[in-house]
Length: 618
Image 1 (cartoon, rainbow, N blue to C red):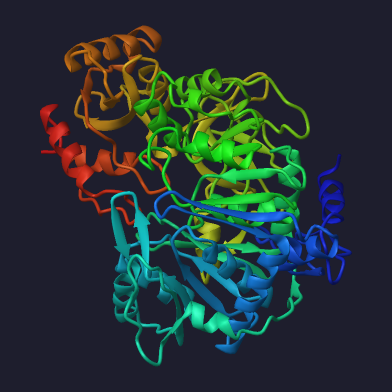
Image 2 (spheres, helix red, strand yellow):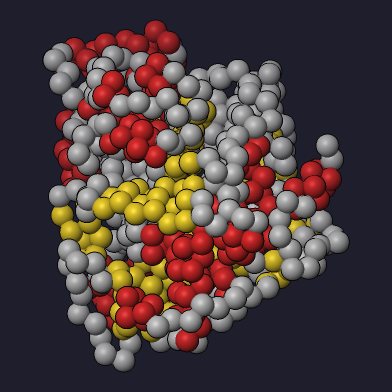
């Protein structure tokens, strides 16, 4: 099918207040505009349309919080009522079409309600991951200039309560832009002091709120701004449009994940990340599915059986999570004994994304769950998958290490440093030929020149993903590393991801990371950090020796892999990405900045000590 015909057809499944006559405006590349003359509303497509079609009594949202021992269900009718009334609260505080609203919330239903209420009014939400440090939140307040902020008194972790309100107050103090109003959800675990004249209580505001209808918006009006880390330290505000997002996400739910209206779809992520936006909030609700908001962890709330319990309780059909979640479960329960306690027969497939899925984790998940385990690849910028095994179109053979082939609408290619296409199997920069499909980012907030420079300047006519990899003779894409994680050892370009794949095959290794460190003779050398399975009995020196030999056997002496040590844990972002770039800077003795998204800063002290034992981090 022709690309434009595909999206013209997909757009027919969407509710429009004004049906678009034009599919694509390509007059100002790289600023492509999908369905430019259409009018729609994301909240209407997520809620009102299902109630109008008679699905009002179906469960729309399940809230499961092991950390607070709470479970709640909302039907489509109930969720629509909550959203329409909270939109009334926002409107009464002066929020209207085009205004920005920052949402700084834990994993509670009110976060989703606030996002949809913004969309209902045509306001632009910008969700900031709950518990983000004050200075990072302040930077986003100054960039987005919100009229209003929605937050909560606290977040709840397995072993501590995170007070959000003092972080929010400090951020507003630091920021030059001051919001008019803050709506605060008071949680009983730790209520917050409200500031008179600025702060209002969510529950009190909702008590006598009026429900408001949807505001029709232009298809190219922004639905949201989501900040992703920038290399300059200034975060990039990824802008997602309204019409393209509805069309692409609704299409993807059937085409990629093979779910139907009424199916229970669970993305075990956070609303603060792009996965949460696309596949906790918008995608499942556009498709009439039941979505799950889970306030817990894969292990420790209370044990490695947490995910299996949720699947059994709610008859989850599709689970989508990060490989790091499954590595955590595998580390704590390598034999899969907790899984035996639950009936997970409702599960039809597991999708993994967020970081490369090493073949050993994929194999473990397949062996335990006995369903297709689909690694798929996408980014905050794209908003939905670039490459995937599209179960709703045609289930392809699963090839470990590959997210399969490009999803229809994406033309993925591999280019060398001169912008020339490379041969099959040769590593280069992974790029996508313009135009990107609907639902991808249309610009960066208040930074059009940066959008062009950062993503489209190096390879004119292509979107630069920042990832390196290759495409094999069968058209399967292999994403091996971020471009700057392809290391140059004595003139040989080697993928750190390929070495991690080999190390992960060791039976005692739960997870690992390989970074390239500076070497005066060879330019760079690979350095491996290993985390062992809980309860591993072997001496660490033996595991290290065997791991070094594994790489030598599988990749060869060309890898010059001689630096390896065991660590307790790896530094990660809260979404599960390993902070390889930061570890490389520490090893090389270069200046580095504490990443805003780091889960636990103390881990970097542990890594620094481990690197010193190998003669690095001087």
